[in-house]
Image (cartoon, rainbow, N blue to C red; front, side, top):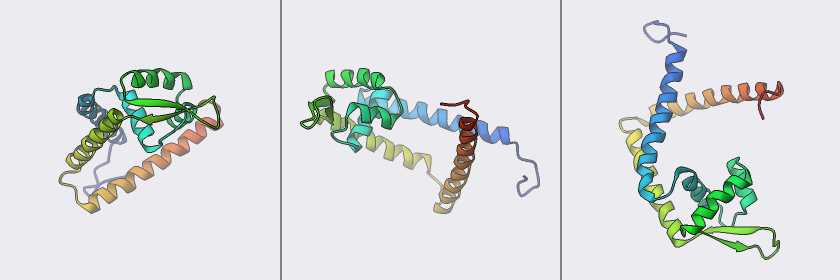
Length: 159
């Protein structure tokens, strides 16, 4: 594949730029989110709980694709910090309903403002057409990765 000048495009350079962008974005977002007082994994939990009030620990683990034990450790810290509360489910005593406290809601709201501001800065100078084109290209890349993932699963190389 070539660009307008018919110069060959280096696929490795594109992949390198995508990875570099993702790493840089994560590092910058983490420094912004440090203001909230919660660690990255805990922050992610708070965001999922905010979108799924009264979620159970097991459902939370499934949704985040981690073990229930991993979730339990983070939830214990979040509960101790006053960010979440657990309430026994009336219909099934084996489950706790997890909800955000006022403090947890404040962190989520602050985080949303951070995300909105960062998103605006990342796409500064982009036209709607450029954003649409980028989204379309990223969707194609993602579809190709999904095909690769399926192939690996079929061969039994991935869980």
